Length: 404
Ligand code: PLP
Image 1 (tube, protein in one colour):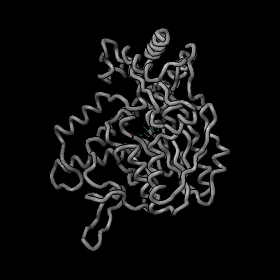
Image 2: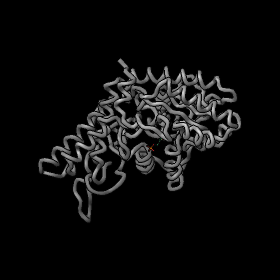
Image 3: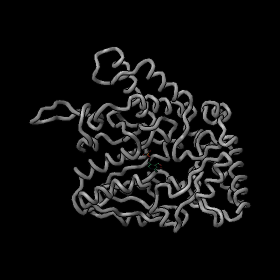
Image 4: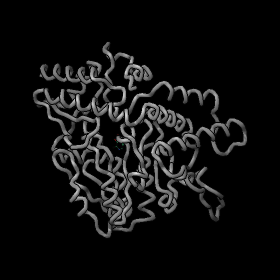
């Protein structure tokens, strides 16, 4: 059913070599490789259907519009949203969070009101709130975690006050791999009358996500991390909430009528989509979601779980290995350090062996501070990685370790 060799054949780049070595691509947390069908869908649209969407009476424009809106429906179905009005196309997770931070804080928050985030957030889910803090005097409250990388849920409960207006948390940590219990955390927030934004950048590619089952008020992700193109992403929001928020950017598409005296705004989802959308990108994204759906998100999750368990077991055999992130529920992101070897040296030497990992703070400096380190080496898996690649990583680390 899950034919890994056939799957790998769908990703031409996996067949290339780096420094004469077969590429072992373990940087999927940063971005994923693209299956041929995604690249072909993009090429095909440029060659055959390219025209600006929504405003054209001509054939090509209408066809491009149909493709673009069909992609919105594909996204809706993928996350089980109620309506396509709830699917806003953005440039990615970062823009989705910035959009929400700006519009939510402007319309729903007063000076002194609070947003709850967690210790393990990506900078994308910290800095947009800090920009609002600078402009509007809102306050960030932070959920602490234990040494294994589990959020302290009792502390989380204690953070709520009448000033709490929003919770914004990662579904899966891009450093620790922790899968946060977002469903329970949403229930807690709702009991306090507070809506929740879930950063799904690291969950959407790896597990089935049902926004209605989670009861998430907002859910955001990037196309490029789920085998789709760069430059396109999604903000899901419950329609009631999106209706309450003002537009983010002004321009074409987001208006109903413009005069110098008064401008009225378009309905959802277009109210939040100023300017020409990345309609080619949305076609690519929809194709990527079709691709992973055909494999089955449950199958992908099960395959990656087994691979991660294997990798953790093998990595722990290495003397001096320190793995950061030992949460009960974890995904296929493994951050580590070995002895006193600097993460940058390890990453550079692994690269020479054809093994692509990421090194550094992974855009989570507050988490690094909490861990008392400057950075880690991070291996992150995708649906096409294999045990042989894990073995290559382990052998590579051993080789580097012996050099030191
Ligand atoms: N949130 C998390 C948890 C991430 O891992 C990332 C990217 O690594 C982002 C947000 C930002 O995503 P993007 O750069 O695609 O906007």
